Length: 263
Image (cartoon, rainbow, N blue to C red; front, side, top):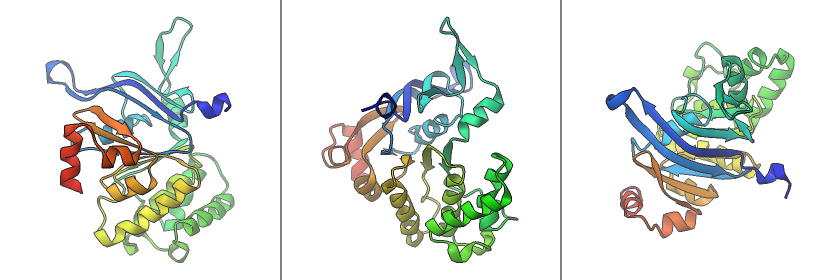
């Protein structure tokens, strides 16, 4: 195995996140260590308020960590380290460049309401990467076909169901050719009958070898698609391992209690 293959796509070490200052600060992440191998799917489970979404946002610099480090593809996020080992905050444009390599799909779709599905997927490659409109259109059409929306390319978000909007959001994230995809409860805002169409797209993405970190309550998806399942509670990773081990033979009482409520 080459050094590149051996290096995790994501490596978080001792990550802390505190919102606010002093005694009033809210300690949301408490020393999280996480390694995500290339081409793998990691699913993060946990009760509301356990720090799952905050951890995901720290993995692409939407939140600045309070302590610790995050490396993506071997590169330190948000900082450079000098010869003396002192960390210096990167310029916002450099942080934005790092973030552009990481796709993120949120609970809410955040599509531009005045743009069609096609235009939503074309927007970032044209505006951020300087791709020609012709090239961006060709790529956007490919991606919308991949997520099963060939017949909806000229529809505006208001004309699409929630599941269709979320699939456009996935295509939009893929349009930047990310090395890593993060999903923050991508089906939680959907009606139950629309969940399957989004999970099917995610399964296809996983099968193609995309490295994915998924925060979800969909235990079936975790069981079928994940290579690694992480359970968080109170800002820390309580238990992690292969799906069959974590979901079928949980050792921690807090995880046993959680699964009893969601299964």
